[in-house]
Image (cartoon, rainbow, N blue to C red; front, side, top):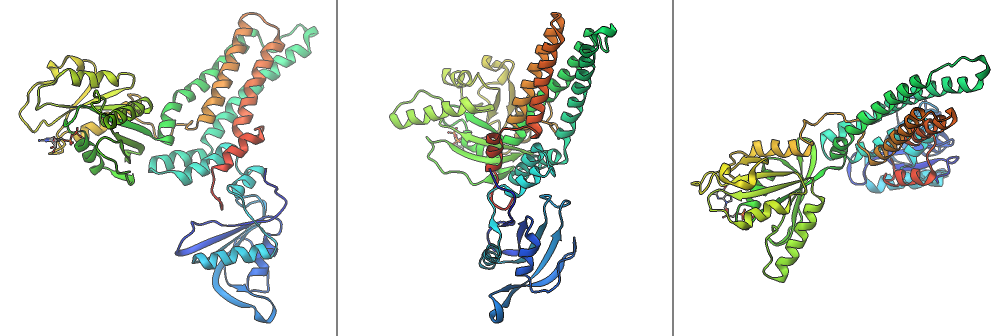
Length: 457
Ligand code: GDP
C-alpha cells in the first residue's frame, strides 16, 4: 500500500476560493520542509499558531507570497502520529497549489487519497472503525449521519468490541488452563460455565446486529418509490414532500414517463424519492420502459408509497398498483381529501392492515402525518435511535461471522466435544474482532477502505 517513511503534503481544505486554505504536511521531514517554505529563521514551536510569511524563489530572488499561520504538531501527539505542520494560507487555488509545489520541491511527496488517515491508523492514533468514521463524517449529508459517524469516531463501537473480546479472552484462558493442568483434576471452568459465557457474548453481538439495519439506513440512506395509477397525484405528493423538506441534491429532470428522483433529509435520513410512471399495464414502448424502470425501483426501495385518489371511483388498476409493491413495506396515501369523497378507505378491501394516511397534496393536509408514517416504516416500525452502533456493512458482516463462530462453540460444548474444538471456534470469533478494528485486516480490505477518501484526508 502506501509507504510511510517519507513526508507527505496535500491541500486539506476543499479546492476552490475561500477565506482560508490549509496545506498539511506529515512525516519525519515535515519540520524541515516547513522551514524551507517559511520566512522565519527559528524553528516552529510545538502547538503554537505562528504568524509568518510564506516564501517563494531562491537566494536573492526569494520573496514572500502570502502571510500565513503555521502550526507544528509534533509526533506522537498529532493526527497522524508523525510530525505534522499545518499552514493556513489565504484560500486562493493558485496560491495553495504553489505552496504544495514548493513543499514537493523541498522534499515532500504528494499524498495519496486517505493517506493522512491511513498513517493515523498505522501509528495507532485511530483504529480501523474510527478511520472509516472519518470518511463517513466527511461524507455525511444529514446531521444525523454526521452524529452517528462522530459516535464511531469517538470509539463507541471500538469500546464495545474491546469489552466483548476481553470476555472471550478470559473464557479462553480459563478453558486453556483446564487443558494444561488436567492432572490437578481441577477444572478452572466447567463446560456449563463456558457455554454460558459464550452465550452472553453472542447475545451482545446479536443485540448490536439488531440495531445494524437501522444504522445502515442512517448511513446509506434509503429509497422511497411512489406508485399509483395516472393522475392520482403522485407528482403532486412528491413535490409537496420535497417542499416541506430540504432537498439535498438537485433532481434529475425527466419526463413523466421517466423516473424522477430527488434526495431529501427526512428527519436525518437521506431518502431518495422516486416518482415513477406507475406499474400500470403499458400501452406503448416508451411507457413500457417507464414501467420497467418503476419495477426496478420497487425492487430496491425500502418503502413503497402507494397513492390513491379518493375523489374518483377506484378500479382494478388501483388494486393492481397495491399488489405490485407487496414485497416491500407500503404506506398508502389516500389523496385529494379536499375534494368530495367517492369512497372511504374502510370500504377499500385492499387496505386492510396497511398504514393509510389521508392527505391533500393541494392543501398540504396530512403531509406531516405522511412523513412520520414513512419514517416509521423506514425505521422498521420503531423510532429511529440516535446512535446505532453498527452502520457499516463490513462491520455487520464481521459481527455475523463472530456470532456464527460462537454459535458453533456453544454447540461443541453441548455435544461434549474436546476443549480444543471449542477454543478454535472462540479464536475464530476473536479473529473477526481483530479484522473489525484493524489489528489484523487483509491489505486488500484496507485498500478498499482508504480508497474512499479524497486527497488531503
Ligand atoms: P400523477 O399523474 O399521479 O403524478 O398526478 P399529478 O400529481 O400530476 O396530479 C394529477 C392532477 O390532480 C393534477 O391536476 C393535480 O393538480 C391534481 N391534484 C393532485 N393532488 C391533488 C389534491 O390533493 N387535491 C386536488 N384537488 N387536486 C389534486
